[in-house]
Length: 171
Image (cartoon, rainbow, N blue to C red; front, side, top):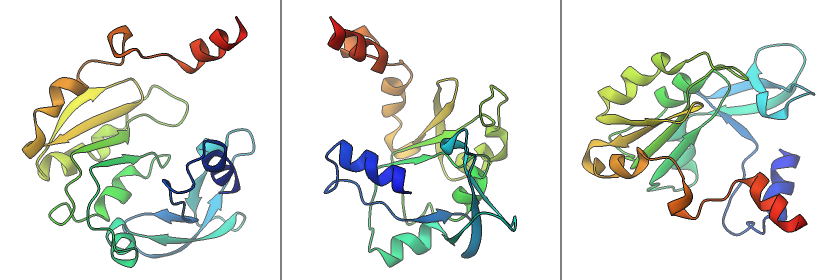
């Protein structure tokens, strides 16, 4: 969590991004955050005795508690618990136009989207794109976005990778 706060501050996004030290799932309660010292992005929640105690909530409960009425995009990357997070959301109340969900096992190309895709399709979302790591879904009422998402970032978008950006600074 402290690392996230540093990244937010380092990118001058304090007034744009609101960070909350909690986990999302399909039920409310408590769990332990089990961190991987070699890869903080692969941390997960569990019932292991070791770990950092953390509050667990659902998307619905979080939105009620923080008076969230609308969001247009949703990104879920929770190291294998994506289906649980999606099950904790009322898609009749909240209709993000685009939902991005991590679709592979941590640090792997093994696909995991079968665990949650039926839930999204049943909530009137359509698969729009897979980038090798994430599956992109578009709400049926915004189906026109699928065409734009089907083409990866490219030279015509003036897209520059982080590596290209860093190299340009060295020239």
